[in-house]
Length: 557
View (cartoon, rainbow, N blue to C red):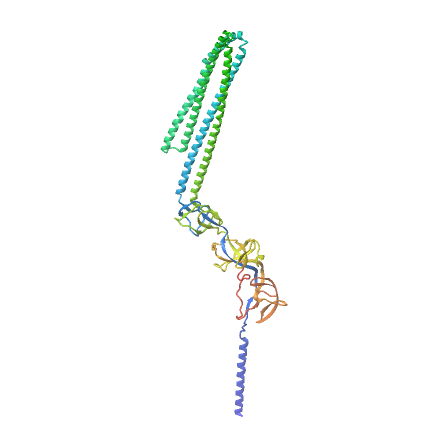
């Protein structure tokens, strides 16, 4: 009995131990954490964007190729690549020796041309004075010849009928002629001669003074005390005084000749009167003589008219001299243009920045030989050598080749997020400024170039940096969203798998805007709920908190 009792106690103890161990094992199993072989993410609120992506390189809005406008050796290069320059800042200097020599030669040619203009003007003035004097003298001679002819005609006509009266008339004419001769000799002629002589003396004095002044100015020019312009002025005054002297002398000679002629005419009239008296007294003996005088007067008039025609024909000399003046002025204009061009060429030896910007490329060094040409803006070309290239980095742009299937989603002014490889975690705001009117085909791929302009300048951005652009097609702010991998499409609509009490529960949802990486949830989910992603082979854990749209954080629009 006793042994049986001991065996039963041992059995009870063993069962108790088994129960206790089983309890702890069961409790341990119930309290152990469950692991799910799924990947999850959290429902969040934020921005969902749909975009089209494309790649390109950063480039400045405009560039300037600063070219050499004259040829020569670079004696100074004042900038280097990366330097910021302002408009008008020195870029380089070309040896100006040849340009200086050309300018000096052009100035010398201009001075010579200017002197020729002055000389031609003076020659024209002298020719005009001579022509005028010749014509006036010839006209006076014609008038005198006509008067003599008229007188001879009258005398010849009246002589046969007035023989008896001619003696009385001859006496009266003789007295009148003698009185006229006395008057001419006593008053009128000396007064004219005196006035002409005074004008001549004054012109001669002015000529002497101008001659002395010219010699003095030339002497001072040789010593470097005066400018060439003062010598030119003195030469002009000398030429003018000379012309005035010659004109005064011509006038004096003319007056003297006229005075002599007047006296001769008066004496002739006296002689004629005496002759007339003699003729009258000779009783018609002068009839034949009057006819001869008439013929002589006619011949004299004819000769005077011929002389007048000759004098008037010399007017063409005035035109020739005038043409010489025009030719001299034309040459002066050419010389002036040559001086201006030479001065411009000299200015071109100093090369300055045509606009502000950054030197992005240097093509020559000090000592390089360059050829002449002209500056070109925006990549245009002249025949000159490019010295440097200046870029306006204050405005940067990207030309993106957008696939033809996406071009209908691009519009002018559209928002764009630009990201460069150098700063992969930053987006730069931009807008579409140009859509090319023509597509391009490269390796059987058709794209359309689209220009994107950055809204702000960042000094870290450099030309030719690789850039990716996200063209924002649509966006919604402050909405619930989940990764696109959380959405399953079924015949009955969109579904997501939600974790509820460590269990996966399928729930119907209404999907709004679908972006590249995320979808808007219009209804069916709450902020903070955990959804299961359609991925395999990873431990269940929330995905990293990426921003929606384009596979990364949204651009700061």
